Length: 282
Ligand SMILES: [Cu+2]
Image 1 (cartoon, rainbow, N blue to C red):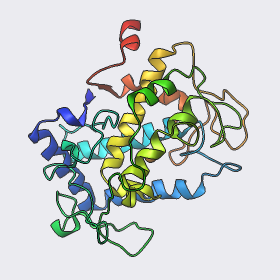
Image 2: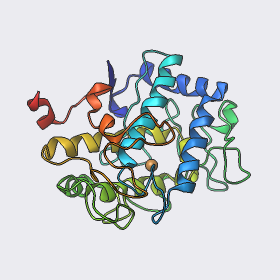
Image 3: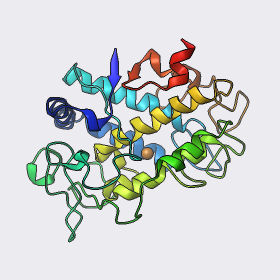
């Protein structure tokens, strides 16, 4: 069974295995297919029309399935690899070991935002940005430049306390847990982290930065923690909602998976620290 660990607790060997598996998917073209898929959904998900990957209730189950597919590809390259998660409430500065040269590399240089160290630096020759929204083929970051602070534990706790999963109009204007976690409303959690990292992470082609997977693995863990805190609450809407994925509707692009299929992460993986209430229910 796959165990997703906090990135801060990985051994050097585990970091090397993860980055090598990512580079292997880049080499074979598999990596870029994921970037293309994500950008397609960013472009087509709209508040007043059809919406699946973002600004809608299925933001969480869609990304859970997207990460599962990516993790399965990593495991084809190296069966020992699991997606790590980045708890950005704890590891909240550019001095975190996450950004060291033996893992993801650091922030970009002032002149053009180009990442200059680590396995994904353009100069290292193995990680060209091919699926892009401008001419630049190098990975860029500007950690903390566009927004000063990552979300705090207190801000996360306030969102985890919200008992209702999602509410009409089921988009970026909604109240409820999903939209506060996604960040279109309130203190802004998930969206703000994309902006804090900057570079490609702040665009529709955000999976070009491998930190995308660790950010979303933590957002996914927060969904599991919310479920543990609110065992009487569930995914909404239940049925009959136009332009929105209801509990038992299938999700594009897979068309063989529903939000209901994605509710229990323990069918697929566990976390190094499982949410307490969920553990006691078993
Ligand atoms: Cu995201």
